[in-house]
Amino acid sequence: MKKVILVLLIFAVVAGSTFAFDILSFPPPVQGGSFMIDAGLGMRNLGLSGHKMSIPPLFLQAEYALPVGVPISVGLGISYAQWKWSYWGFGYTVNYITPQVRANWHWGLDVPWLDLYTGLSFGWDIVNVKWKGGRNYGSSRASSGLYWAFQVGSHFYFTENIGAVVETGYPFWIKAGIALKFGGSGGGGGSSGGSNTMYVDADTLNIRSGPSADHGVVAVAPRNASVQVLDRSGQWWRIRYDGVEGYVNSSFLRSRR
Image (tube, rainbow, N blue to C red; front, side, top):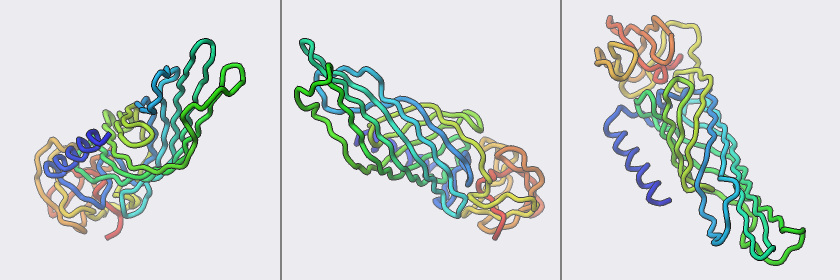
């Protein structure tokens, strides 16, 4: 797990040095008010030699991006796995259920498809052991208990609402699955409202010739600069700043100076 975390941290450093970065803003795919759901499979090492996995480790988690001035999301998660052991007609089934509460900080890399996050989770490992025949012949070497852990992960969005998630942490040393995203108010937590005037919520904001980060930069606006919004369609809005028209990612705009 340490190697996986190290790789993700190296990726974060390289990405942060390559792309525009604002630590106090959500990345382009996520906005204040976004609701994210992840589900998939994981890998978990329990140290239970001789046991056979009967149900693969599954996870489901849901988080809400807080509509405040910092890129934080909070939510709940649950994971489940089942192992079995048997010998000469004796045996047991071990069920692992792990509910948790989660909080993540989303790093404001100016990459339209990437949401890199780190955070903390707290929960309870519920271990249920069911012996064959209803009799307990010994210990399963597993017990319930409270835990807390770090996690590092990324969402990779193929469309505005659908993508993939990869995360390392607890209880799975690695997990991956589908990522769904709904809603979001834009402006790094501020309301998009109905006003045509918005303010830059980044140290510098690249204004591009088209609605993606692949287009060239036609102007640069500093923090708190006012821009006139001409079109709010999708994630990339068409704006006018200092006589120049172009496109900016709406995650880096807010309604108040």
